[in-house]
Amino acid sequence: MERISFSLNNRSVEFKGDGDRRFLWVLRTDFGLTGTKYGCGEGICGACTVLVDGKAVRSCQASVADMSGHRVLTIEGLAQNGRLHPIQEAFVEEGALQCGFCTPGMVLTAYSFLKENPSPTEAEIIRAMDDNLCRCGAHVRIVRAIQKAAGQMRRVR
Image 1 (cartoon, rainbow, N blue to C red):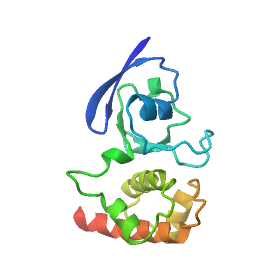
Image 2: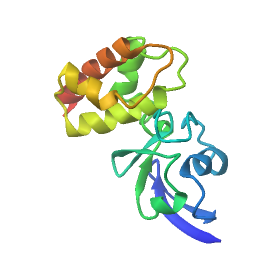
Image 3: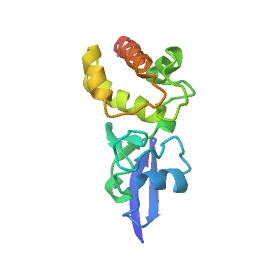
């Protein structure tokens, strides 16, 4: 049994158990954070995306041991003080979520991308989001939401 310490949504946590367990399942079953979704289990669809030290990571491909000493942010930790993050607000305003299954991974991938590229072109957004799949076909609205969020985030800086 391993003891693995990391920050989860701005709180210090410790996991006791098998360090080889997929991080997705630790989040969902041990920490009760079900916003991170199981999609393909292969790291292809993006539904399981979380942020590790601000970078988008596919939690179905990472072990809980990989998180030791890192800062992890899930969709549940993105809103602050009861207020949605500008990316979340833009997704709602632009109707960029239909069934909502892909939305947490889309939002966190967009967050990581916009931190590195605060003024992206439409083509750059499409390229950055290309590995996140949406079966509902909300891609145009997702791109629009990310463009809107980028503008809002630049104004807040």
